[in-house]
Image 1 (cartoon, helix red, strand yellow):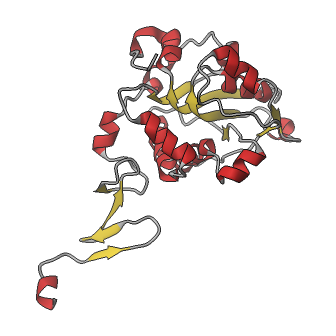
Image 2 (image 1 turned 135 degrees about the horizontal axis):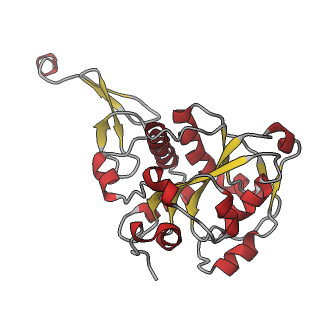
Image 3 (image 1 turned 90 degrees about the vertical axis):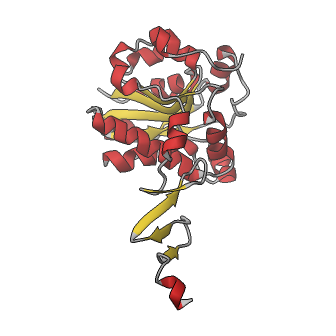
Length: 260
């Protein structure tokens, strides 16, 4: 055994994040495929990142012009990270984050977007506001996937996650709701500003974040609540966006590969 140790680099396994150290380098598992690679914990490997379809909105966001829902037109920046299409595994990754507690995926997505915002000079926000869960759903799930995503962004940008909103009414999940009217009705009036936050965040630039921008119904309800803050400036980010919604904003950049 001592003879073999001279030729085999010592490997140190640690509990928790399941990383290992070899030749004084720390290797972490990709939160998507589990392949170990040298880098930072919670970072997607090159193969998985290449397979996903990024929007690159941080480069072209000035070309975005959202008119429906109307509330989206009040945003300064709209920054979804990936296309929510059927040709990649983004849906399964978000499902794992949302329903199976695969939190490193959310952190990885947040860090990735945070680095892109830093690179393009869009680190202009005072705080990040995750779309809240109802307290009962949070109690059952144990976490808010939008908050996990928000914390990844916040870690890179060095700004706080601000729990400005609360969800006042428990409603069924919108995952299987395809029609905008149905989604709009399901979230109508379910959000509110927490007491004292209108004064606390007056004049700030807040980045609202959610997991998926599908029809804009949830984002719109949150935006309308946040607009009660005096002189607030608002932007929005999400892990993914439905291609048809992005196409309405600026056409050809969004290929229609989603399921009908």
